[in-house]
Image 1 (cartoon, one colour):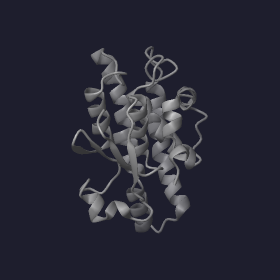
Image 2 (tube, one colour):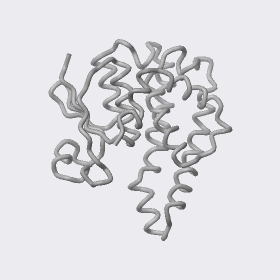
Image 3 (cartoon, helix red, strand yellow):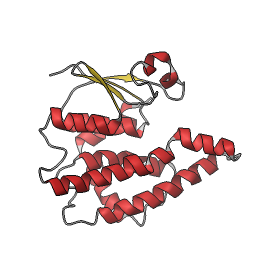
Image 4 (cartoon, one colour):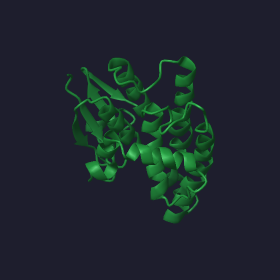
Amino acid sequence: MADITLYDYWRSSASYRVRIALNLKGLAYDQVVVNLLAGEHRADTHRARNPIGYVPALDIDGQMMTQSMAILEYLETRYPDPALLPADPAEAARLRAIAYAIAMDIHPICNLNVTNHHAAAFDGDDSAKDAWMVHFMTRGLAAVEVMAGHPGTGPFLHGDAPGMADCVLVPQLYNARRRNMDLADMPRLAAIEDACLAHPAFAAAAPEAVGP
C-alpha cells in the first residue's frame, strides 16, 4: 500500500470529496491541515504543492496531485476495486454528468473567493454572501434532483453502492445546509444523502469527524 498524505481543510467541500473516495477505496492516509482561515493555502509551502493555492493536494504514488475530480479519477483507475463508476459507459457518463454539474457548475461560483469578491465589489455583507450562494446552489441542485430521477438511481445515485457522484453530492448538500438552504423540493437528494451519511466511509470523512 502506498504512503498517502492528504493536504486539506475540514470544511473544504473539494477536500471532503477526496476523503470520502479514499475511505470508500479503503486507502489509509495521513492528513495535514492547510488552514484556509489562517491563509496557509497562500503560503509558498502550499503553493509548491498546488500553484493555484487551493485544497486538496494529494501526495500519492510519488506524485503530488491536485484538483479533486482529477484525484477521484486517478483513484478509480489506480485502485479500481471497489469501483466508483459502473462499467457501462453510458451509465458512467450519466454519473459523471451529475458530479460535474456540482463540481464545475455549482461549486466554483459559490467558492468563497468568488462570493467575497462579489460582496466587496457591491458592498455586500455576510447575508448577501449567503444569498448569492443559495441562489446558485438552489438552481444547480434543482437540476441535479431531476437528474437523479433516473431508473439507475437506487439508494445511491447508482444502485445499491455509493460512487463518484455521491462523493461530490454530499459535500455540496453539506454546504447548502450550512447556508440554511431549503431542500424541501429535493426529496431524492435528501434520501440519497441519508443513505450516504449512514455509510461508514462518509461518516468518517465528515467535516465534524475530522474537525478543526
